[in-house]
Image 1 (cartoon, one colour):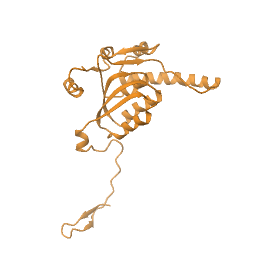
Image 2: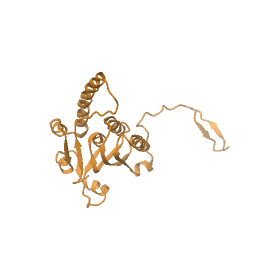
Image 3: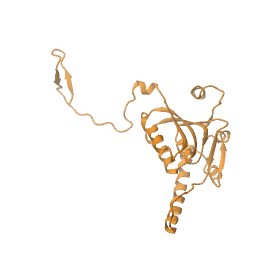
Image 4: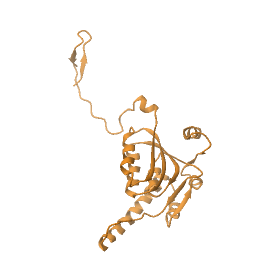
Length: 212
């Protein structure tokens, strides 16, 4: 119900044509002027598994459908955590610029691939390798067999996801992933998967503006 303030009496009176508006779906909210003008910064650092709660909180606190920069320096962690971070970036409509400050390896490549634009330095490193299963618990033969079956499916699924998000040639991804390979920043740029920034070329935002 909509209530209006009377010009003459200064008291609230009921609108002659009260109506209900439908609740807007996710992504339909208009950004405030402050949200449009300001860009956020976040960092994905360290082991993804150990910092999962902190990393999720970072990506959930920024406005949806907003622009920002994510700096990466992580050797990886749980493949499920990497997948979930990439999913948050995509489904929250975050127009993120990903910058590899040091290392971006293993499961961390997934959220980096989910970024709208990707940047590396000449000193950046990305490690591609097959999915690894590690467990400190005693596992029965039947359970090990099921994990083996599941990880084969998961590996195929993640390869397909990387091909789609990065735009990398499937054969090139296979040569990097099996048995595994450290890919330098310049190599990554040469494949058209990221853009190069210079540590001595000014701040990252100035360099990004120059490349548009």
